[in-house]
Length: 456
Image: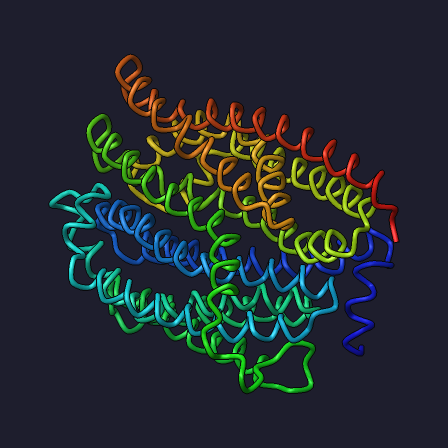
């Protein structure tokens, strides 16, 4: 398919058809990418019998989330900006955005990897490591650090690949890495007996292969968007626009990392290492459904960005409705399954009976409001796709900061460990209500603007 044909279909193809075309590969890709952490957790939980290992992995989760946030600061902003300028037929600007963004990703990655390596013990203590879990958490993080920059390159520019008209190829990126990781992780742990570092090395190798795959796409001059000489010189207005839009997912992940630190410390106080291990089950389980929704959002993003840039608002609203409905169904299914099968889910990740009991209690409470999360994620991504970073940032922070932090300090005082778990569904519901109001007013505003600017 020629470049102009790829872009034209964003503006002319039936909404359900184009959303399915872009979202299905993205969903497959994001779900497969979720398997990285899920496979590591399952393999580690069964290969290493020490119960402290599972809690140690839980402590590393917010550290890796923070690293991902720094990558998304550039990658998500670049993908959104590229979609909008392609909708405006400005291919040259899309090339400049690409060239500038790749350099920023590498530079930021090198800086945070160095800082994590130097200050890893204090960082892990902040995120809830106990004397028993610190050695496992430290070993895993130090071995996985080399792959973090590669993860940023892979996931961030996979979004750019999709935004420039290659959803199918973007799907294969994550499939390649996940399949490789699924083979290497059990091999390194069960056969080579490398322990927790084996899972980290498996991730590093998988990320190296997928990073080479992704970046080779942009070196191919036959592709819609590729590296062009003269586009690598830092363009500060471009960098500013990328950072502005990327600030939304960046702050979401940073806030999530901070919340994880508060949650882990609360769990350590009220439930000990078993409670921290239980949150691994919750995080890994909901990740599957959240990543499906994120895949829908990734497929939605280039359609929204292109049609918003082209002034085709009717297509904008129809895409939003279809994506929000689909996401709501997905997270509702996730909530139902968590309440029907909590013990089998917990048993996938751990073998210790006390940890399994703690995980069952965790799932029964934390997923009470999970059904509405899909809508909230789509609403946030809607604002981001339109380049309205300020609103996307605020909407992201309602759950993670504005609601969650007060709940985590108030509820445990009255309900102990169950108070920590109860904060999750309460914040899910409150943030969804705020998202609904903001979405209503934004749609109303766009419709008013469309009356004074006829659709093309």
